[in-house]
Image (cartoon, rainbow, N blue to C red; front, side):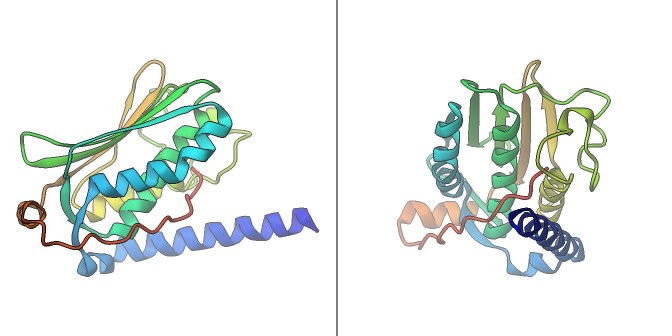
Length: 206
């Protein structure tokens, strides 16, 4: 019975991920873009995953600009960041390290990145890991169906960006760059803007 329930949950997870991907691909979510602070969203995500990291003996840290204003869909961006952290936790060995960073760059873009000390991704697999249902040899035997990075790529594309993957030898660094929202930055400096609540989303296992 427990195995059957687990299988049903897995199928439901795949179905929900495909529905979300279809929704993203349609572009409808763009109409709901709001001003948000990506640094605050990242802090909440790191806090959410901290117990899982501690349980595995992995150090999970955050480096962020005081304010990182962007326009976007807070739920989808939280899902994308959650998928990247979840993916890093899955492959980072015990006593390894995962660093999350959100930085406002000189070109007025905001970079959100997750780096780990895991095995990384072989160069031959890098061009294909964002394809839906693709799983490389290193993924065999681990939970997932090959939709996690596909969803992150779709979220990045919806926000006018792309998912970049860089092999650190060892480890992987995944990043997304978004245009900064200067109007949001002014509002935050004046102290008159109410922050949106962070809503944790279940990660789609890669």
